[in-house]
Image (cartoon, rainbow, N blue to C red):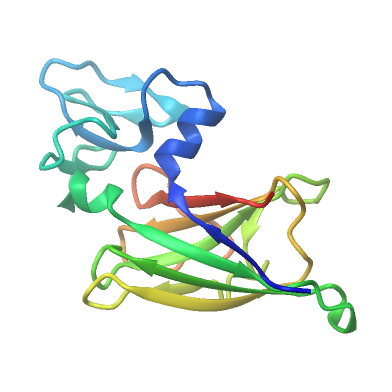
Length: 195
């Protein structure tokens, strides 16, 4: 059986489609918006006054901020330029249906720390977990030019409708089996749903 090859899309696009937003909005990245009140935004993230969730149509040179209005060190153009592909091998019955997953990325945050998480569509004890389940082999750093690649073995094949998410860690640390604090030190950048 041939591997399945898929392309990642910006998390903002997938989130907006799934939640039926009128605009392509990133629920975890913010931009300055003088006069905007503090609010509980998308994904129940409380953000400070003076900012709002970034939209993919916003000025590409706008600095990206976290929910506390701290600069993340890049602009929207660089955040939304990220791209990636994934190759899913056929499950290996000799290894309990483990699945080898190979990813390649471009235009990531240079030297940024990243992790791969799976959002499972089937009935599991944890619907959200590191792609390798343990968090020991699903994290990596991007190179200085923003490229990165990794091979991760998922203990079970990903079910139809499950999503692989690339999480950027603004604090530069791995968070093991947890993503981190979304909107503050953890940001979903890219995603792909298994057909």
